[in-house]
Length: 328
Image (cartoon, rainbow, N blue to C red):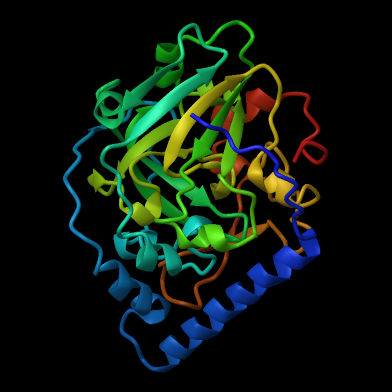
């Protein structure tokens, strides 16, 4: 697997990135207001519902209900049409509707994932082998986006720890890096200079080994739609959504902490840990509350954001003694 190195790319200042994203958010908001004013029976998300309904039919992917502590929130599920029609997947564009509109041609077969770095025997596994590596489970997780919106999604997959154990990392492996697909022929968003491609994320080894850290192959009882990160992605529910890398093609075990894509793009705004923390605001907006997508109409009251996205009892010990304002 070839890993992209810095080729002299100079990223735009963070002050140039965030206003664009804010402008897009405002544009989405104004569009939603217009739809609501028009009397749409589905409120602000009718356009995305219609867009998601054009996606090709998926294949059923059954799973047992998980017994992992904290893996099944009892909150109301986000409607599937919203969860598959309102996404951040910058490889297909920065507008929330772009992934559902542009990702449907993504080729997910064949698909192979390489295991590299500090492992006893580097190897490559195909998708079918990965799916069969552990029993499939359904887990209902909260998803909190750094931009201030949230969802509740029933994922299908299993704990990432199963794959890590199968990879047999050496004693030098302290971090796990995830490299995602960067195919300009399929992904029009790669023409944008918002990020340096491919998209790269990482976890500390103990974070990656936590039972709640999940390798995901499906949602709502079926295989992942392309716009949600097909054919496999992460779900790390106590961190902001951008930590859950989509369309993974390589997993690398490292001795040193790597820089992630958003750290490189805007280090003053996005840290390595990116734990959901209502007490640490993004430089440009508060993280104290969130808007639940698809919940009770456009003007629903914002929810109070929970520490670690509500998973503090399960994961808080991972960060004992760590200054979470410094290590954001």
